[in-house]
Image (tube, rainbow, N blue to C red):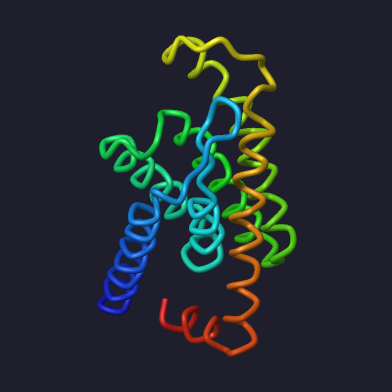
Length: 170
């Protein structure tokens, strides 16, 4: 039981650090269409999927989006994109342990699923005029950049055996 609690504390600490990275890097966003693209969120999603699992990833995406909205550095559209991508890439990595599939899942989950989920939020809550497919391209731009950054980072961590150290300690 003690080992389980220590592992949970380590996971929570890493999750907190990844959330902090997402919040601190919030100014590194840029407008594309009707949304703000934030590639760092997608980098964090992939890292969470690989290191912590899908549920931590979704929780982290939610908390990061919530803090960004409160700080004024994000919009309500951050919730569907980041959470759909985090869930799908976390599930794919959990069951396959294949990095390429995880990267594709983050891009698909955020751009297609998150983009479609953003439509009702944009039209009903934010009162924006939008086509049903209007958020797929902006979300794709954001997630592709962040996923590429995560892929490079994970490749470096795997080559230096740091990924093994992280996995063993969690």
